Every structure is written in structure tokens, then in C-alpha cells.
Amino acid sequence: MATDMQKLIVTSEEDDEEGDGTDMDVKEEDGDSENRAKHIADQAMVGVEAGMLSDSFDDQFQYHHEVQDQVSTPGGGSGGRKCRPLEEKERTKLRERHRRAITARILAGLRRHGNYNLRVRADINDVIAALAREAGWVVLPDGTTFPSRSQGSRSVGGPSAAATQTSSHQSPQQEPPPSLKGISPGYPTSVEYNSGQMKGLLVPSPSPYDLSAGAHPQTSVMMGDGVDTPRIQPLTAGTVDTINVKQIVDVYPKLSEREFAGSAYVPVYVMLPLGVMNMKCELADPDGLLQQLRALKSADVDGVKVDCWWGIVEAHAPQEYNWHGYKKLCQIVRQLKLKLQVIMSFHECGGNVGDDVCIPLPHWVAEIGRSNPDIFFTDKEGRRNPECLSWGIDKERVLRGRTAVEVYFDYMRSFRVHFDEFFDEGVISMVEIGLGPCGELRYPSNPVKNGWRYPGIGEFQCYDQYLMRSLRKAAEARGHPFWSRVPDNCGSYNSQPHETGFFCDGGDYDGYHGRFFLNWYSQILVDHGDLVLSLSKLAFEGTCTAAKLPSIHWWYKTASHAAELTAGFYNSCNRDGYAAIVAMLKKHGATLNFCFSDLGVLNQQPMDFADGYVDSDGLFWQVRHLPSIQT
Image (cartoon, rainbow, N blue to C red; front, side, top):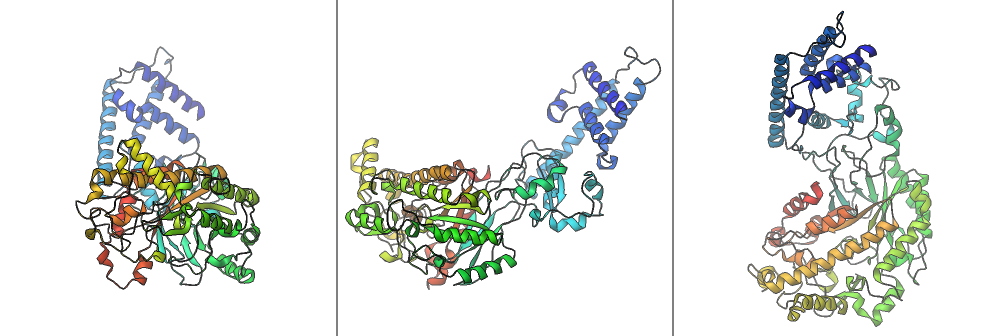
């Protein structure tokens, strides 16, 4: 049979040379019918059932058999070959055009009515793959298709059982490996809750072979206050190298945490209590923690998540790190065959929603702050916020000869070195980088300790000498030195937009000075995230990293979006304040945790939630549909 197939392929190639080129348009898009016949012949040689082929392919396959019969007649030889009739070529072209027209209508219908995100030049293979994923199958880039765990029992012995027989090493009754449990198609967007009853959204990058926009986010279940809060911690989609069916069982157990693209499987991580570690960097209750982790293991969670507090590890002197308690935690997690996600927490704990312990910044940093309070964020009344360091000192050597970002990098590098074995073994699966108050990339514009109450607009936090110096340089570079001041008609923490001259409709926020100031203010935020994440990428090379972004969704229905502006997101009605941030995160390959705090605010505030012109759904839709996230 192999000899016959070789003759068929040779005949097809020579027929191509003798053609008149009239079907060039067909060849450019989908390849000529001879190449398809060659592909069919190759499939037939490895035992593909003829019933799996389309009717059009059957016609072409039968036609080439007829050509082969003509060539193999006595006396045929090279001089006796018969050229393919011109009428047959025309019929092949018509069939191909008819098939393409049908495909175009199918694609148009799926895009319009089914919300399928198919590429412009998609073909029938893309349609079949999308439908298969929605039906519960896993489709790899090379076309390898197999059922998820939920579909495995149904596929065995079913109509598609013939496809499973193409792999000779796997019996029809064999179940998928344990690492494939829960895998099913879909876009891996999900929702995450933190210890402060805040729900968040991870916005991952879709894989190149699963761009379905019709999947729905997954939500977790709250376990109540004072106990571990379950988080659904999704991870960005990764790519899988092209593999054959025989490699599936060997490859999937080695998948990294991000390679769940093409499935709706969401790894579940439970947030450990904030006080799991005491100020001596020892486990507060090791026996109780062990029992809790065993209970979580029996519940089949993937792992746990813990804050790694800067104020505990480097508490007493610069570059003197105490990792004892965290190393003990890693050993327990490894013993129970769980995984661990770590948060590099460079902020103070205490005073925010859900904080039940107090963990200040390192003592040596507090000492520097007493002599130089400008290392902290400052409001217009001169009140300092010691929750985290001001971004104005990111490049200022005011921390015992080091800049702030150098301090962060030394801390992250020390963690990577001390926990090298746990990274290599895959026990530590992700590191989230703290970028501001509460670990979020934002200004501390609404501190409760300074009197802020929902739904106040907050205040700008750039009155320390370092940020004011940066503003002055930016104004001078722009040619307007008198713009080196913060607008003075912005109200106070608990003002509402219409009560101020800056944030009201048609206010100064949209004037020349207002636009300049807001551009500078928001760019400082983006530059800080860019600088810290670039260093974290060096420290944790090859490890999944993440950053957290808050949802400032009150006053979202106003023109100025005042609460977002004071937090550093220049997201007024005529400008997108999140595109630059998401693009920056994408550049560093960092996962975006988009945290929603409406539940916590709603539980604590007696006033009507609608008073703040809230639109959390609108904010989520805006971030979810950013171009940097969709590509």
C-alpha cells in the first residue's frame, strides 16, 4: 500500500506541473486538491478511518485513485500519462469555492450569534476546535483531541471511540492522568476573594489556541471570618509545544502553573490568616496550622497563599533577614504535597478592611521616617501615611545608602536564594509582588485612619518633597513652571465630585493644568510598577509573578471618576486609565489580580450603595475588554 501511495503522490505532483494555473486562488488559501490528497494518503498510512474524512475529501481521494489507475495501465509509462481533464479541474474549483462559501457563512454566524472569537482567516478546523472545546474536549495546537475527566467516561465506547484507537500505547479504558483532573475547555477568567471579604478578578492572557470569548468566570465560596478564606487563584495561560498523542501522559504531569489554557480548570488556593507568623518569624500555632492544612488537603485544594511580611523578615537591621518561620511553612506544605503562593508584602498590616493583626514596616525604616518623614506618602494637610514608602524615593538613596527599589530587590533576591529548593521542586508556584498600600498598585488616597469614609473621593497623596520635586521638574520641562503645584480646589477626603471645582462636570480636571497634573500623577504610578516588576523578573526568573490592582468603582458613573483620579488611575470619561497599566504588566509577563471591594464596603456602610454612583460591572467590563488583555 505504501508503494501505491507513493505513486499517487508522484502523480499528483506532476499533474500540478501540467496544470494551467487557473486555480491559483484556491491554492493560496487552503492548498490545492493534490496536497489534500497527499495529506489523506498520509493519514491512511497510519490507519485513519475513512469515515472520519469529509465528503469533499472522499471525492478528491476517489478521483486520485482513478488517476492512479490510468497511470498504472499497461504501456502507461511516462509518455503514456494522461493529463487531468480541464472539466475535472473546473469541477474541483467549483466544489472548493462552494465549500469555502459555506465555511464563511458558518464563521459569520458563529461570530455574530455565538460570540466565538475566531480569527479573520479562520477555516473549518478552527470551527471544529471551538465546538469541541465547548462540548467538553481538550484540543491541543497540533489538533490532538481528547476528553476531559468529566467527558472521559462518555467518550469510551461512544461514537468517537475510533479516534482514541489511534494511540496504540493507551487502552480504550485508560483514564486521563491525575494532573488532567478538572480540565475542560473555556477561557480561564475567574474571581478571587481575599481575607477582607474582597472579591477579585484575574485577567489572564488567552493562549494562541483558545480564544473563546463565551466562557464565564468562576467564583469561589466564602468560609467566613476568622478562618481560612478560599481563593480561586487563576493563572495566566501558557503555551504548550506541539506534541503527539504518545507524549500526552508524559507531558501533562510536568505542566507549570500557568499552562491551563484551553481548559476551565482553576487551581484553588486558600489564603492563610494574616497572623499565621508572629513578629519573631515563627509559626504562631504550628500544630493548629498542620491540622488546617490536612483538612484542606482532604478537600482537594491545590495549595495555600501567605503574606511574606517585610516588617517581620527584615525587622531590625538592613539586609538581616529571618526566614525561619516561612521555611518551616514551606516544609509542611511540601510534606502534605500542596503548593504555596507567596506575597511579597512591602506594606504595613493593620487599619484596613479585614486586617485583624498589626504588622508595621521594619523598625529601622520607622527610625529613618522619624528624621525624614518625607519617605512616606503625604496629603495636603501634611499628614504622613506610614503604610508604605512613597514612590518618590524609588531612586533616592535615603534608606541607609540604598534606594527603595534596591531594598525591595535585595529582599526578593534573598527570598529566592533561601528557598531555592522549594522553587526547583515546584512547591512555590507563584510570587505576588506588593506595589503599594494593601499590596495594590495605587496611591493611599482613602486612608480610614485619616478620616476617609465611603463614598468620599479621597485626596491626592503627592505632597512629600520628593514627589513635589518631580512635579516641579515635569512642569519646567513642559515650559510651564507655574504648573508645579497640586490643584487647590480638589476638596477633602469625604467630598463629593459636584462639591469641588476640580472634579465637577466641566471642572478643572479637564483643563490644561488639570490634564498635565493627572498625566504626571498617573505616570508616577505606572513607572513605579514598571521598575519594581522589572527587578522582580530578575529575582524570580522562570517563576510566575502577579500584581494586584484595586477596583475604585464609586463615582464611576460621573464624568471625572474622581475616586479613581486621586488613587492614580487617570480614567475620566474621555480617557482610558488602565490600558498603560495592563500593557506594563503584560510586558513583564505578570498576572493581573483585579480586586473588587464592594462586598466589604457594602457590609460596613449603612448608606445606600447607589449614592456613590457605583458601577462595578462597568469597571470590570472596561478592564476585561482592554486590547492588551485580549491579545
